Amino acid sequence: MQEDKTKLGAPYAGRLKIVIGDSQRQLPTWADWLMALGEWMREQALKPGKRVVVVRLPVRNLAAAFVGLGALCAAARSHDESLDWEALRSLPEGTSVHWRKPAGAKSKRYSGRVCALVTMHGADCLAIDETDSRGRATGSKFYLPRSTALSHGVTLGSMSARTDEKLALSARFMRSLNSDTSLAWSRSPMADSTIFTERTSFLQDLEEIKVQAGSEPALWMLDALCVADTQCRTHGKLLVVPTRTEKIYDAPTGVTILDGAAAISKLGHLNARSVVILVAHPEYDEEASHEILPFLSYSVDEGVYAWQLGAKVGDMPHGVEAFAFGVRDLSAGDYDDVR
View 1: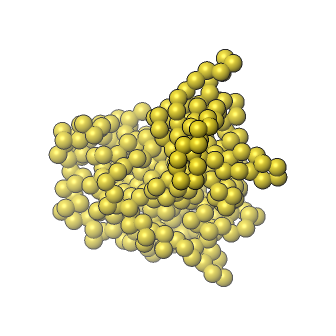
View 2: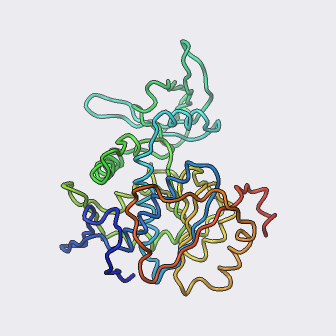
View 3: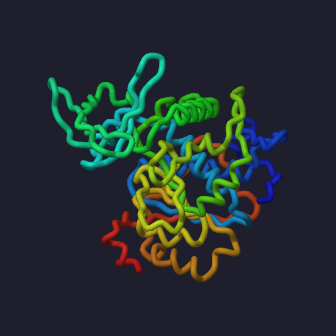
């Protein structure tokens, strides 16, 4: 995408730099606008209703990453630790989880499957059947009380020492951007937002890019995004899912990004209350329009909220078009109603 040189509002201009090799540059205005879009949609995901924004761009390489980064920044600021316990206690029986226990100067990794919610000594505890490295039951139970749930860092994906280090770096990076960022957010149990895309090319496009905020060292953008894998083998905050997947497990209060025309077919099956569709101009053909049209036919006024007061969001960058609409909060059972 070409950088628009006009002076627009810029939430992260001057605070965030892009580093590629030995070259450093200010955040382009188009990337700044996409981050603002991600933030806006993540903030709205906490409000009633459901909304979709369709964005058409000259080129969409990297666009999903910047929308995702903005969404994660908003999530880190609005994180409520009390909700982490609610998320854990609502996990279905048999769900695989991972956690760490202090072991001297280091910590030891454990895994298990959720068994039940029990009461011990007047306090709620999550009972977990421990498993070995091959997923076989060991016969031991781990009782996780609410008071120590966060300190154990129970997650759906495993948390190696390397993963823990990456998450800590990402948390500090976001704290440099926004001082009210929660440092505990990166270790909350689940992934926050989701991108449906061509996973391999998405990762390749980002592997040489770093971001830098304030006095913190430059951080690989993939680490800043806390990318999680689809099998939950590693804990992360941004779930990057191949477009061709049949299983969809996006978070209702996160932002789900449909990256490319092929991903639009997922629209009727999503849990997220905030959805961003990204397409390049040549991709927005009759087939893509046909996928969106049924939802436009059933669009509602509710669910789309204005930008926050004081938000320094400028005009749309040159060559970018976007429109937003509210939709009924469809479940899988309602999907056929709009086909």
